[in-house]
Amino acid sequence: MARSSFFKYYVHDGAEACRLELIGEFTEAELSELNGCWRTARTILGARKLILDLRGLKYVDDAAKQWLASMGQEGAIYVPESFLRNALADHTSDSKPPRLTFLGKLIATLRGVRVAATD
Image (cartoon, rainbow, N blue to C red):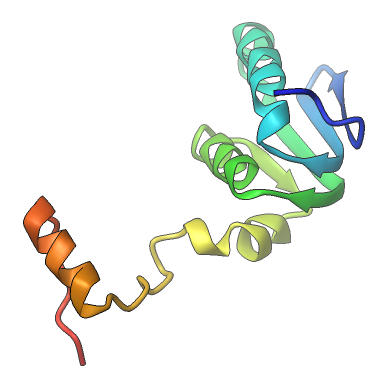
């Protein structure tokens, strides 16, 4: 995929933390390069914190949200903190699963997926 010209990132390496500043429209097209950047940074991070500065983001697609959620699971800190609550809310276990139609329930049953009882 081609890299969007509407996305930039900067690495701010400090003594206490490494801050990854994301700016613009973060989409699946940027994940490969950014993931490579993270793999490299992780090797030299040591005990320092990883801060994801998301104040400059204008748009985040689902693939990028999943990547950001996985970074949080690895211990990254979000700036602003509310980003995790607001933008990633649909990736938490607290969200209700969508209501399945009869056909959806049938397919889930055939696949061996457990389906919650309806109200």
